[in-house]
Image 1 (cartoon, rainbow, N blue to C red):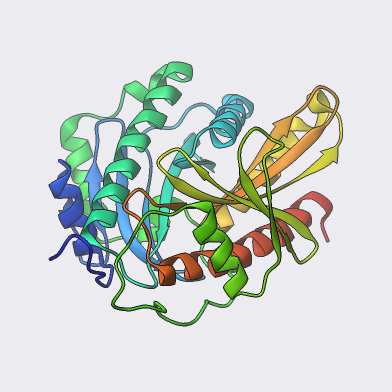
Image 2 (cartoon, rainbow, N blue to C red):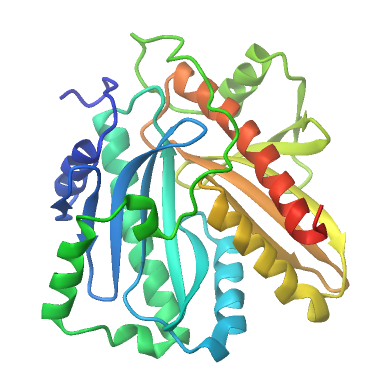
Length: 324
């Protein structure tokens, strides 16, 4: 398998990539389970807005229900500051848990180098998130005995991947269509001019702005003001944000819980609350890892999927905040 040729994504392709970068997994056919002492991850391909490679998982233990607000604060701060994974607070009869996920659109296929980078980043950053969480919730570092973990991990091979990962299914926009516009092309580095060209191919007007201290492209997305920029990695970040008002002390938890619900139901976007001195804001991102480059077709499909996902997640958040 060549490093740059594009191949159809599958759980087995993701497992092979993980093995190349030093991680072992259990092949369940429709998904691969990656056990770790304090958490367990699963890799699969989900048919979302566009076929999407997902590496997601959950803590092995929960914390007491009385610490729900603290867990929401931890997840909100992580999601506002870190690129990946997206953290989602979960609840069951045993207590409050934490799930995490990283995603990569693969509707145009995926190269060996892209798969290796994605799996390495997803599994390493999941470890980092769990380690950070254990600093606030020490009980996370006291998982079940190894025999119980092995039994649980083996049982996960028979479960459906989204349920393992704490992802709610359904409610996504219609899938984007098409294949790579240049099937013979190879992935190459992404920069703002390439992103601008992708927007132009969609007849979307755009401007370059550097007023935030970071060079980014601004464009209109229906009623939203959207931006796209390159973050460290690099990662292509499609983003929108808005100011809600409200009291940061009184309303933070309510808005954080609404954002958490959106993150549970929208696979590829991340929504997080940001507290200013006198108001609350919300940020929403759709992120595409690009360390191994992207073809023009991959970039075009990522743009289309990002726009659909951001509009869909915005509608869901509006419903959560207002009931309408």
